Every structure is written in C-alpha cells, then in structure tokens.
Length: 189
Image (cartoon, rainbow, N blue to C red):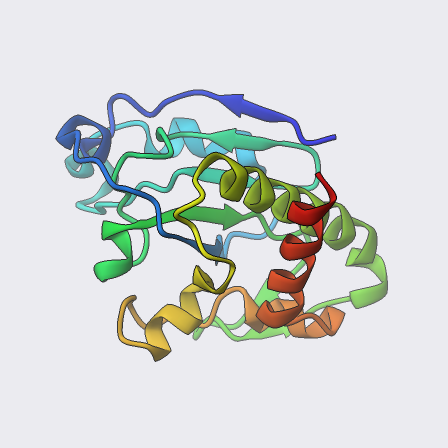
C-alpha cells in the first residue's frame, strides 16, 4: 500500500516562487546520496538557495522503500530537471540504498545486487504506484512522458545526468520496464 506523507517545503525559494504547471509528464531521478531516506530531505532543502550554498533545487517527492514524502504540490513548478521539463513534469527522486558506493565522477564503484534487491523491489513498487496514482489524478500525463533524468537529457529537456539507469541496470531494469509496470498498475485500478 502506497504511503504518501505530505510536508511542503514552504521555506524553499521554489515553493515561494509559486509558479504552477499542468502536469504532462514525470521525471524520475535518483539522489546520488546512498542511504539518505525520503524523510531527511525536508531538513536539507526546506530553506532558501542562499542557505543551501546557492543550490536552486526542489522536487515534488522523494521515495524510498517505505514511504513517499511529497514536498511540493503536484501542480507547482519544481526545480529538478535543469531544463524545460521543469515546466510540465513532476519530479520524483528515488533514494538509493545505503552501501552503494560512487567514484569521484559519480560512476557506481561498488554495488551488491543481491544485497540490495529487496530494497530495490520495494522502492520500485512505491515508485510505480506513485506514478500510477499521479496518472489517475492528472490524465494529462502520458505514459510515454514518464522519463528518466537521463532520457530528458538525451532529448534536450533536462541537464546532463545518467540517473536512475546508472544503478537500475544492476537489477536488469530499464525505463521501458518502468513505464510498462506503471501502465499495468494504472489499468489494474
């Protein structure tokens, strides 16, 4: 059962800007911060950019293997894609498992697939359920407009990132698999 907890980041400059969107897509990100759970981001990001070292970031939600934390209203413009996808995409950050190790260049240096499989399966389920929920709430979101940050980069609508495919590959999952799972979940309800 999907557990969404809403705690709006009202002190974040993105929230204060108050710009709205009509959601037409969803951008899937991953945090590049292994072990940081969905609930901890509120304390880190619920402040002005000047208090975050000039970082202008805010996504609609973070998901881990237990919960989804909604930090922006779904119809508020987020600062997550670094491109035009901010104008009509809901941004969702997926929390990575504790113990995943990156190189200095943010390549995955160490990943124990067997150890992380249970976490991944629960996270995948939460993310699929969340996207299906959003499609039911906002019929303007097309299944093919659920994109990864990397896919957004490849089509020129997001900044240059490789998430989340850079670690999904260890579980033999792709964005096509994800979209298919969301489509099945949407049809089942």
